[in-house]
Image 1 (spheres, one colour):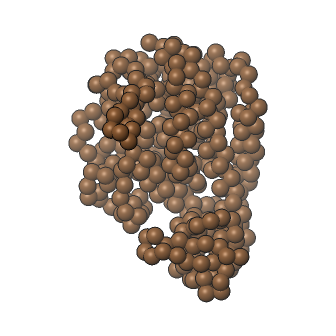
Image 2: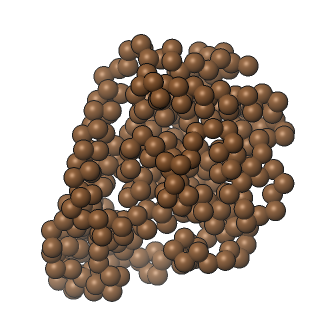
Image 3: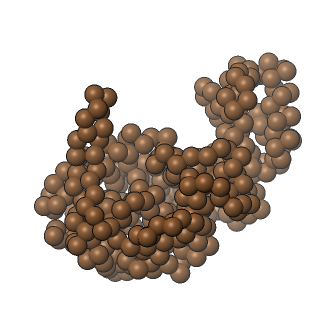
Length: 348
């Protein structure tokens, strides 16, 4: 089995792009801390929106979907799931809620990772929930002509428990001893986790839960207010490309993890930028229509009511819809499509 040694990376020279991303994230973190002191009530509404988006997006990446109405009911009202997809969504919701509420009491160990996996499948009769894989898994690609190709072979089942122990041990050591910048250690840990692929099912969703957990534990709280999972879902081709590029040579310990580090740092920074935008709209005490107008000025191309709701969490749905209607009537924006396919375009 390959050797995991995160301490060996402490003297590595990182390129200017990675260093620039890290510096930018720390700058945004400082701004967020100031914001949190000013508008805690409004920001709580951002938390609820982010939970829905995170649960929806992380499951959608794996093809697990339901309607917008049911998603809202499952996450906000904790309604009873009706089918397999909803059972998976409800399990993810519970695991994410535990991370939100108790991240500082969840150590990074194999046992706690297994517990999170068990929670994710708590609404299903899954005999391997909370257990490492019992069959060899493969990361494959399917092509239009019908053939599939194995892109990467993760560790064998018998190697998996020890490997999980090792990456947790190494991560805790470098973070505890301040040997490695957390914003570098976190993507490396997640990349190793995905290469080990420790479970029969749910590896992708677990990796995204762990990303949020590790960021919170290192005091990067942006995922609480802006969904990191939704950012990944929007760019999932780039996510898979970065992962594939970083996996080559992993078994021999000669992989280049830099593409994956850059991808994850880019997602984190984009989320902080989104948070900054959202706060700039809610910090001023504006009338509803002015707040919605300010939100539409940020958007380029098509946007939906949900996009505006995320930017104006302090407004009621009726106030937001009324403002959009007035802006359509005044010719500032144009409404296109019907029902769920409705979108808006800014004209001025």
